[in-house]
Amino acid sequence: MKRSTYKAAAVAATTVALVAALAACAPAGNEPAAAPSGGGADAPAAAAPAETPEADSFGVVVADSWKDIYPNQYQTYKANESNSPEGKQDYLTEYPELVTMYAGYGFAKGYDEAASHAYTLQSVSETPRVNENTLANCLTCKTPQYTAMVNSEGDAAYQKPFAEVLMEMTEPISCYNCHENDPSKVVVTQRHFADALGADADAVSVSAETCGQCHNEYYFYPETKATSNPYVGLEAMTAEAMLDYYDAMDFKDWEHTETGAPMLKAQHPEFETIYGGAQSSMAKQGYSCADCHMAPATAEDGTEYSSHNLVNPTEDPAIMEKCEGCHADLSSQIVAWQKETTDREHELAAKLEAYIKELAAQRESLDADTLAEAQQVHRHAQFYWDFVMVENSEGAHNPGLAQDNLDKCEDELKAGYALLNMAY
Image (cartoon, rainbow, N blue to C red; front, side, top):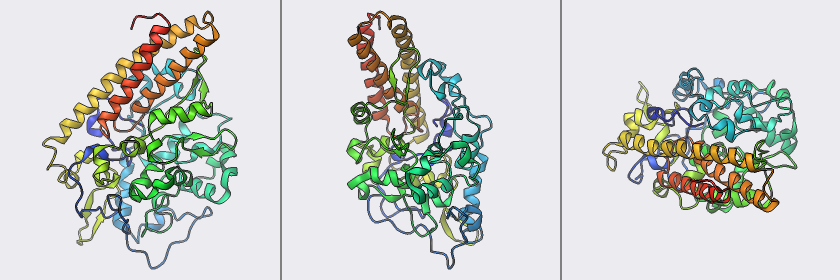
């Protein structure tokens, strides 16, 4: 779900991609209307309605039912439909090495830039990555109706056939995901992510956690097929700690068809990139996702509200005004951060592909210990690379961390090249 390398102007426009390194100056009483910034107590997102509209059969009040009660929020939410799947980047073209890197896995069949939340059900129904064996757990962050189903039925909901459950779903990501059925509060409706926050649930604003509940690295627990996170607490939300977690449980997403390595596929670790480990500088200052992606707005009648059109912060003056104190030219800075990151991604992708092909060529001649070591290099190096590439900001959310993870990828590859007697 990242953007095309040279479409810097479109960064974060498709999602509530978490904020951190894009803004400036610690917030001082300027919390957005949708949800407050910082780690303190969260204020209501909106006044509670006199009467809650009727829920559907899943227990979800769909977005259309709120349109007369919250017309401004609804209209701006609907504006996300302009960010459609049409014309999106094909990552298998942008990074041709991915066909080799993902060999034997669904992402080698199709991997497109994501459209907005309005198209989550359409996108998952059209992707070539699903097949007759796909389970309903792939719908975890695609519709609030499935979220409600999981919360009602428990792990049994994860084990249902994907196609069967998809036919029942009609509502893309909408109000329930962040507010449940009460717009006066902000809620983490994905219970597995609430569990993964552990004792740190109060260390980050709920407004950031509601975005993070879908914008995170996850896996499907082998026994129950439940959507799970490879950590508990903020300190464990680093790529290195996640590798330790996966290695300790001997987990793999798939076996690479060319090298035989037990591989991991990173998802979209925006929350971890910003709030995990040492955290980004802007996370430390108390910024939340809404500060950069949900602009403060005023309706024609003077009503102040938070826009639910999830935008690129550089495209909205009301957001950028908050950045000018520390960033003389934030747009150019973002372009520079992204170019540095994507240039290295391309460089290391070529190195990874060469390593994969050489390991595949030597696979039958290596002794068991050397093969296992070489396969682990493949597993680890590619995870570090993937962790950066699939994160929605192309490095802009946390430039230092992006480079650090790419450094770790390169260190792994240098060791692997030496092991296979390759010239780096």
